[in-house]
Length: 230
Image: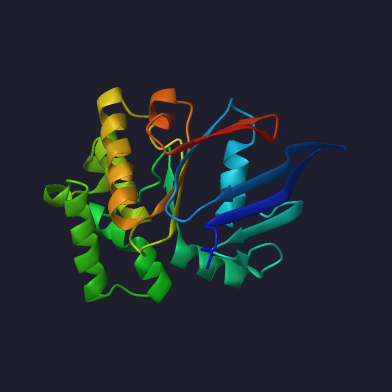
């Protein structure tokens, strides 16, 4: 029996109103990603990469087309359904990491679970500690996010994205603000997680070196997929 695709997108469009004009950012995107794939999403600024990630992450609704993640249709679902699905099945890593500066590294990692359950649980603290150890930051667990280096903050963000054991992690320029050494370390971490846990990754990047380390490279141009290489 065939495995349900991790991501399945058909005829996806997204329009933005600009005064009396309408700008079409996504123009009939077709995309299938298998469970456990490590995929790079490349293309110039304005090609639609971030818009596509936001729609896949249920942070934005498309204008038309269909989106399925793990076989579940996300187009037309109510906001509460999308919030629950996102929290349970999707993790995020952003270029700016978006950590809470006055929270410790441990508290930042725990946040998705605390949001899901409405409280902090002992098991969540144990898992967050385990994830920080896994990303090499067990000695920084009680440091405020504001006290961490850029590379350390991004590794905390990676740990946070894994807190609820999602099947899909969407990473939007996760190494864009890092020096080469820190970028390579974060990318190796994503590769290791993909290999050991089978977590699927869709990574938007301008860095060809980062993309070359993925199993698949998808190139976007002018709101469409221009090339798809394995």
